[in-house]
Length: 87
Image 1 (cartoon, rainbow, N blue to C red):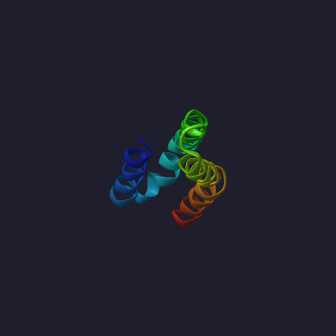
Image 2 (image 1 turned 45 degrees about the horizontal axis):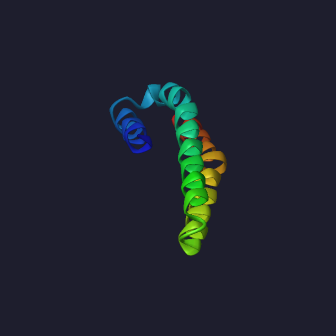
Image 3 (image 1 turned 120 degrees about the horizontal axis):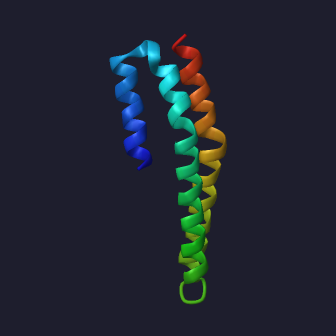
């Protein structure tokens, strides 16, 4: 779902650069929420597999941290860059 929303932003930026700021402001909270939901899903998967597959659970935890940090730190920075570059 995040890929579809991001692709929609890329298309909107290519088609109508003037309104990209509005589109980014509308879609940004949804992308952040979906990123956090994906991180939570990875944590839950790690919790269910920790007894039988310890290495897999550790890798899922690393993946959850990467997804969560991307949703909380990098994606808002990219949104701000997109907003400031289209002015």
